[in-house]
Length: 328
Image (tube, rainbow, N blue to C red; front, side, top):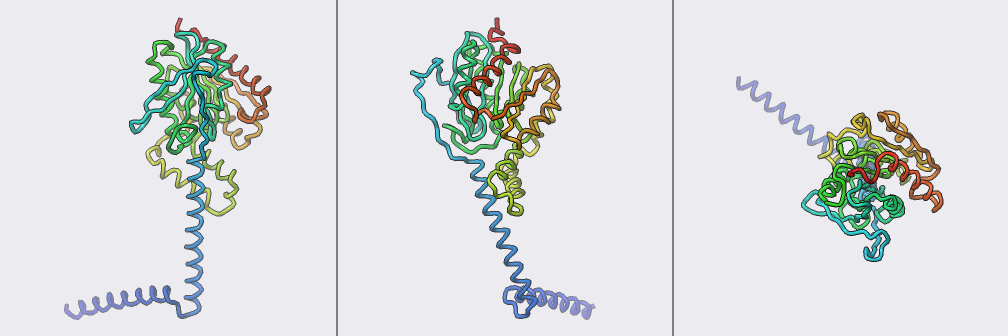
């Protein structure tokens, strides 16, 4: 009995000695194969660290873009807007601009896109207000005057829901009739809210995507760093970890059938081919009533004349499907 115990103890000691010898050889190689293997391992580790660093920096730039907030004096702005705040996660609040239309009429919430801000959609706001709609616009997280980082749609959807809920408490709007317009990131948020809120009577999504991870992939490719191995995968993994609380959030197309009966317009832009196929897929899966519009340029790249034509199309869509005087 004692003999076998001694042999087992000796075997364990021998195994520990061998492991220590291997580790020592890796740290201080003396043979040629060990030196080659150690060098390759060092190069591999350096490559992983380098790719991880590049990916982390790129993802940071995507989620926290440079902000250049536009400032306006509401007292001299056309349309007589007023500041209107609503709560967001963390006990903070977000301020938007409310442009009054016909008292008690429907409200259109205009949702800007990624790398844009509320000031960039004011001509569309004016076009809608001129036809007696109430219009509300605000800056999503990480854009314009709003702090924090963007989640490319996850947190923005919650912000939009909160804005609509708070707007519905006003005594000068129709609390049961809202419309939505959104571009790319704003389009994703608009689609998500339209799928679950019965108060949304009609909506337009311009260059919308199915999942915020799609936008991460698009931005990685646009940066030119996608040619480096694993950068796209590292960025996608990092984005999922940063938004782990949304891990069970399905793509927007999964619930798009719930928009049955709601008039909807999908807009494709020829200058954004990375999003065009996704828009077509959303349109194909969407139930009636629906329509697809194809434009040569995306909204924020249009000339003044093209933008005016586009905005007339949007206004006519809402006039046809959701009259300003719905409350009456």
